[in-house]
Amino acid sequence: MKALIFAAGLGERMRPLTDTTPKPLLVAGGKPLIAWHLEKLAALGVREVVVNVSWLAGQFPQVLGDGERWGLRIRYSDEGPVPLETGGGMHRALQLLRDGDGDEPFIAVNGDIWTDHDFARLPREPVGDAHLVLVDNPAHHPCGDFLLDADGQVAAEGEPRLTFAGIGVYRPSLLANWRDVIGDAPGAGSTPPRFRLAPLLRAAMDRSRVSGEHHRGRWTDVGTPQRLAMLDATLA
Image 1: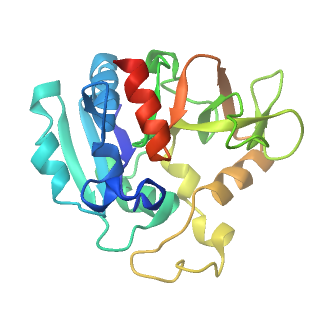
Image 2: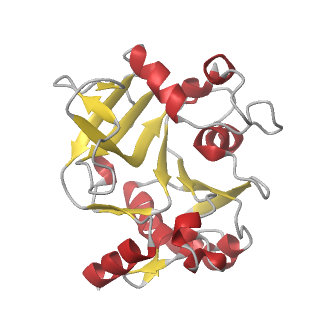
């Protein structure tokens, strides 16, 4: 199984820290945020990781190299000066994540989160197009994102809602008909296309093609300098 780490965001809410350092390379607990993910993926047996990059892209290979220190092979999907959003970024990275035209699932993780979630719990073969990890709603996102029902299916509507943790397992088939779902949204006609993943997930949920799990452990969306400082203090 391969993995994708989303690391192309501009990190605007983290300024001034991200004026000189991409958010996933900011340090918490003595190591870059992205390194925590690389360690977990390596322990799981993942050997190939794609990191999508844009803002200050050149710093990633300088800090992470080719992944040898973790027993990984890291490949970089450079999106240029304008990030392609989550959907566009995943779409561009597919050529590195899949073997031929197969539909082998892969793990995708946001590079700006920290969690004690055990990646070994993720299904190697999700039943549908995606499997998402959800967490209790944090104070900065009280309304949540999706409903997780008693059967382990994720729905776009309904209560109570949980927050998407930025961790999931996906099949390339999720993006197969992305143009039909995205339509004429801004960026969809660009080359390469720029679009969000959320509309594709909601469309798959409507077809009962998204499963999920509720992680009740520790999780932090490192979205502000204050949250980074709190996380760093906790890990120290």
